[in-house]
Length: 160
Image 1: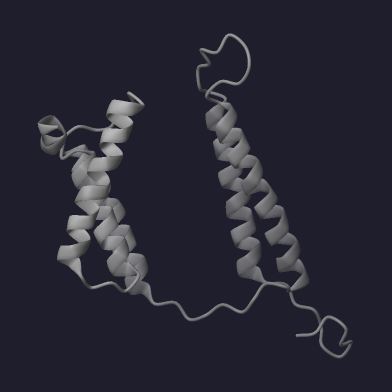
Image 2: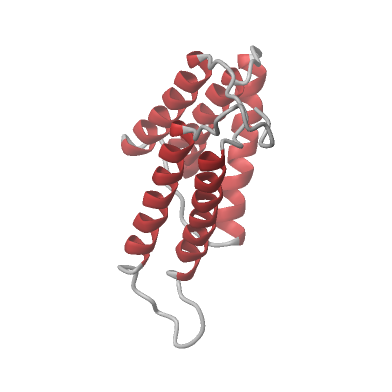
């Protein structure tokens, strides 16, 4: 569709407008939720600053998406394959379940890594599992020992 062709009416993209609205709602929820955070900072920025920064970025994306949707400038969408989306959702569900049942950070993020790599077409599950366990362990140690931040502990974390 060319914008200079008077014979062709300009059509807005309904899906783009819905996406813009969802981005705006997400930005509003982040700002609303950030208001409830308790700030322990005596001066400067507290923990509520970062969600507001992220919400501002989401709001800018919503505005840009809305304008492009009204102008009909959004690119044509490709047909979607639901299998990768389902695999990533399964990975997120596994992450939540493993942490919820006390499996810990290392196993939970490893499950997410393996399912996400499978969603992107990789089929080396054993190799991906080893890579995931090593990376998750290194990330856990960096957060736990270097940054002294606590991540969900499970049986593997207790061994470290």
